[in-house]
Length: 325
Image 1 (cartoon, rainbow, N blue to C red):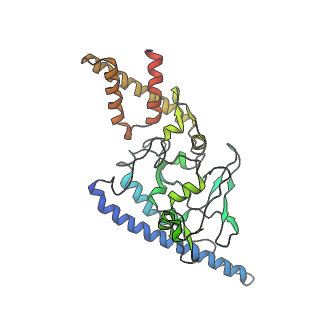
Image 2 (cartoon, rainbow, N blue to C red):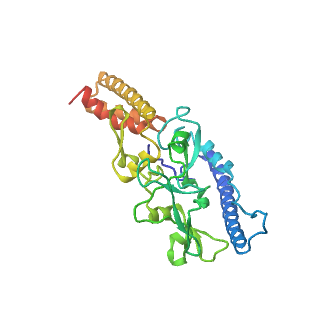
Image 3 (cartoon, rainbow, N blue to C red):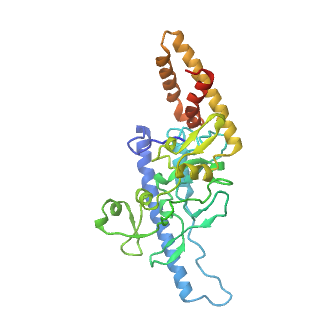
């Protein structure tokens, strides 16, 4: 996993600027439509509960309308190569190793779950509705098209033994849904989306949810993964913080097949490193300068390098094993 330096539209090439403007406008409309659909569904359900339908008939609103996945699929297809290096944002596998690539919603869009222990049962997350009643969290549907919540992810990390609907938060924190805000809340108020139905209630922005919930997963947009996960030789990864440990578990980063692929990438990376080192020393560079140049050369290719975090963590370890100083 590596940090993704992406802050549109400033970081987008000129060719993508017009596309981003159009995509953002369509995403905004889709958000508004999704919020309206969910609130209409809730109101309909409440009405049905107050006046049960005649015997033998079914309620009208079983669930809110589905999402428009074309919008986040377009985000992935347009930026997968230029921003994400054709790799899964979590395990750094490239096409087609653990593919097909999906769009991962950092905060799950349809429902939210968590585990209290590794390999334990999934628990449904709860939150409070506008009437302050506890409900199953409906998912962060208002973030379904927010770029800060969208990451390309391989099928292994996102499903099966991977994340699915998991989203662990810090002990003692509550899952957030609608919040009552006023202009006195400053930036939080400005970033939030007002509810069309419940006056004074707002759907929070990702930045504010991060502060309120303290997610226990690494977000490549905002965290430095190297501060949370370290890799040893043979592709073995270890979480060194709660976020790192949760991320290793939730994204199934201890998968044996994945460990083997990381090990292979580490060995190939060290071979490339020593080859560059030899070339620079032959050219007359002293060892310290040659090592610096070799590392920089490898780092230039890091955005598209599979398992780059594991490779760069292991380089000094392999060096000390093969050529101790």
